[in-house]
Image 1 (cartoon, rainbow, N blue to C red):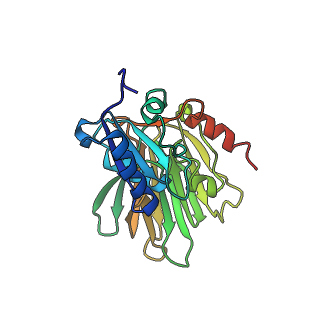
Image 2 (cartoon, rainbow, N blue to C red):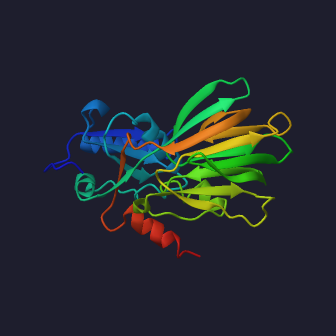
Length: 259
């Protein structure tokens, strides 16, 4: 948190779930609220999906975000408790993340750009498997990957889609990204790669007319792509706050030992 003695300028964001909206109203009545432009901290009420929405909404506003779970999933959130909110925020541990930049070239040769906090994923659009060529820092590393898709995940996103696709969980301080195949058919046993956070990943779609592929940066989708370039954007820093003793790093460690 910023070096302040008191937390008295809070802006509350809530998802459209009734539990979140009702919690927001109670918290405003108890702690007051200020415009986000003047806030010391944003309190996001919802689930992990809403935390991602909030991070995207505040990409250009360097304000820490303290999430409380009022949704179905809460890996990126703290436990909901209305008591001692200012004290919890003041003693919270920081997790600083950097998003991925995605540049897409589609079948009409148009360029599209988006940012991803969790992952950039490429997925087949039809019954046909995708055929992809993978390059790292301009060097082709895999001439042909036959698969349902492939994704590049940040450490913050490594416990989301990446984990479901059997990718590795990555601590925030590791400064690496996960390159993970989705249902790889050939090479059948390829499980992906860990890349330095400075790596520039290029994915080319082979036989794009016959095997169309879409690219998704979190929730932003571009269809019928031919080429995708992915790299970490170090110019943008986003700060999430976690209760003392329940840091993001602790959650990542605990997740690796869960049943």
